[in-house]
Length: 188
Image 1 (cartoon, rainbow, N blue to C red):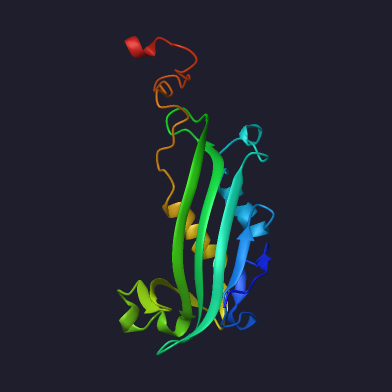
Image 2 (cartoon, helix red, strand yellow):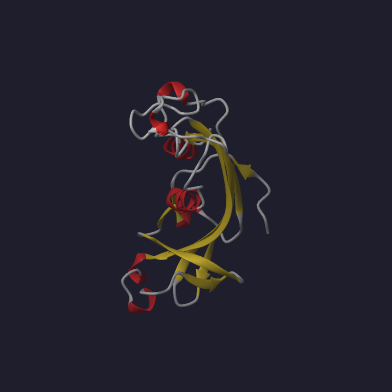
């Protein structure tokens, strides 16, 4: 049964024993400290005067429940989705480029005693709660929720952000922004 109240804050580390066997929902945004930290990390390569904290956004929706998983013990199942808008340097000219991110994930935290077990050398997921879930490990019931969200956000980022499709980049000789001036080095 879905717990009706939706929470708007969650610590980056969650303890399994603080959850019940029923799903708990969270709708997090930049008001949550660690979500705001993720946004700041996305914009860390910008100069301070290029950042636009009012227009950067991140939404993280999580459904979390504790579950006893046969052969693995108590686990924490985390299903989530995220979407966000932020600025990052253009790969060609370093001007701020508007970027978005979005994605979904399903994960399960099991005890870290399995982390070094041979059966997990090549195992990235396991079947639990009627789904194939990505495996993460908890240490004595302490689950790093932020790490899961961080990983999925950063794996899905555009590796070549452009502020404009027709960006001319920087001059390889003098470093001038060719979008604003022709330094003459291109003719040589």
